[in-house]
Image (cartoon, helix red, strand yellow):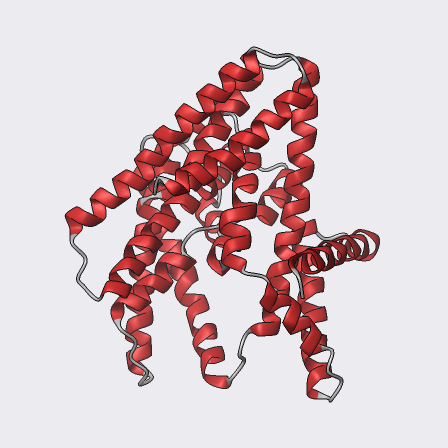
Length: 368
């Protein structure tokens, strides 16, 4: 099955499921699409057990999709830029200490807690896995992707500061999470111990280097935007920034997600105010909002389809169930620490720890 056929099939399913959700269920789009896809996937698996082998074609289609390549080197750059484009940098500045802690130390704390507890639990049930691989699981499950939660918060009229914390954390912890994962996976593959200085050096190069690269690429694009007043050209320039900037940052071994987030923040604030006409701003916003909605729809349909190729024998299923409270507990601890630390200096929304804990959904990055 060729890539065009698979892409056509996934986009067609996304459109049909979006219609069904809007027409009958009225759930937030991403939640509705994934639930419908999960139900359809479960039905296909059940029919396969009953002798109706629709699952063979469906599995072939899903196995054709390289999720890592599709998301990490395809969709992610667009999703991050679209998210960063609409964040007010002044609001982000007001929450910078909390967001910085959540996106860096929060990810590290969660990684260590999940890795340690999962190692202990697996030893307890007689299935010891090397500690480095438990840490690797902790690093891939710690970044959050609360797309559906944000849409619910906006509908519910949640405080702007809470929205900024959740969206700011999710934008930056993707990049930090990928860097931490790369460091631990490198150690796991090489079989040598973690050398703190090497790990910090790689983290600094990837994260800080990515931010500097994104700032430079975004500023060059801003100068180009300021020199032209044609919304078709300006939208094309932002597309070039996202696709070319992400590819170049990856080639230079810098954190491409962080680079795109920083570039998006610059274009969404200084670029929007100083480099665009009102007509361009309107077209740019409409284009990136639509692209964001389409890609998120496709992403959550893909996540729902992944169930078709998961080997559901009994042991991994029970391990997975055991990990759910472990991951939630790690999330609770990692968000409680900054709230407690900064509560003496600033006020927080009511129940902020509960909302941040339950709102820290895992999505595309973890699956990829």
